[in-house]
Image 1 (tube, rainbow, N blue to C red):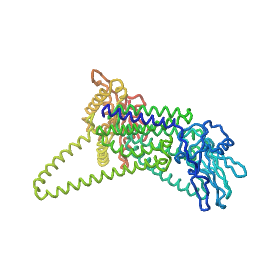
Image 2: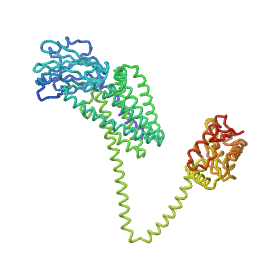
Image 3: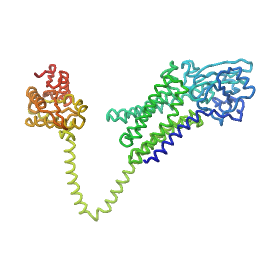
Image 4: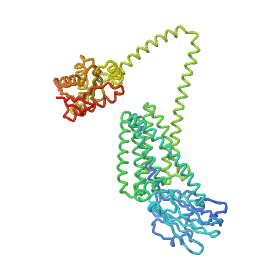
Length: 623
């Protein structure tokens, strides 16, 4: 990607950042229309949305009491919700909402008022009755969870609505989070049904997240690929974000900690962004494919780390809008990274961009709602859940498309082969023989190369395990001893640190060659076990003979230093010796463990020595 393209991408990020800041600065617009009047709760009504019937008043100072607000209401200072939206973004002061309720159902005098947004700090509900009596209830996440009328993730209040008597409802909301006040009233039975369905849907969604987590955890434990770890980190932090934003964290994890209820939102957002940025860096291989993008990603990770730490001390009204605004830049930059790497020919970036595009779009919609940029509806409020579900669907479609393409290609090849088979049987047969011969030669060469370590030329660990199984079987059938050596070059990391990895590699090759020369006369099975460790099988040798061979080998390594790049490097080794018994139940893994225990004893005794393992006694020191 050229400089001009990068400039356009950075310009897009800057515009998003400015847009997020502009949205925060704008006050909520006033509407000229008025609410539709009294909400009548008919005898067959079990639930009702208050939005069409709600008027609001913005108390910028946040200091006015109920008597002053009632005066404003009488003067007509309340306005209808702007465009019917209950989302005002991050705003100072307090908002007052008014609705008049008339209950026509004599069998249901008790209703539940629910604010379908769980993160408001202070809520005060005033119910004004015709006789002048006023009842007040308080709620919000600055109070312990048990202070709520019922244990539910959304703030809720019991309302007493006498039949056929108009009741004025005045709700005061003051919060450092986004001002979102979607209100609804329910009969007890209706609310139980709605809550059950909502919890069931949430349970399904978190079940999907849990299945993804377990699946990728198994892959990470098996492959130890860093991208899987950061995906696990991201999906866990992302789940925590949704758990917090849905009010479930306050309900289940910290119901008595109002501090965590306040700080969990910016903290979880920062953790999710750190995981997302790290996963993008590893999946897109940015360090190798786009160093500039990798540095910017690291800078964003550092920013979210600092912001996460600072959010434990900063007021919510500062940390959360800042974190939410930074999400715009973060998700835009990940999209830019994917586009750049894709244009540079990295094909997996296409799948990344397609699968994550809807998820990132859903996240952006959710953040836009927090700033009041978009109205709150089903698509925007649940944009993150919808986006992540579409991500999994797109991945499934991509895999299905790939399988179908491969199947169609195979069918085309077979069809063309059948059409030409009758005309060129002899030619194709000859070519097939040649191809099979070449394939056999290639297979033999590939098998030989796969059994050799690329650096030292020794056999690989996999090949050693296969061959050693045969040695064990042969030893049991012939009643011959069999011993095992585990060799570790002492302080090899210091050689790399002091002389560099090129010298270290040369020393490793030299040591492998020296060990091979020392063992050539014994018919030993030698392999590189991993790193600077080697493993040796000595058929026909008991523990004492194997210990002598090991001591001679150790001395041989010490006698002459490795010369590389003008350096003379003295290499020593610690060696563990173990003689296998003829127990048919014995395994290669158990033998390796005994030899490894002897090796660690040699290391513990100062290194540059040989220690032999005796299963019946402790490890034996070799003088």
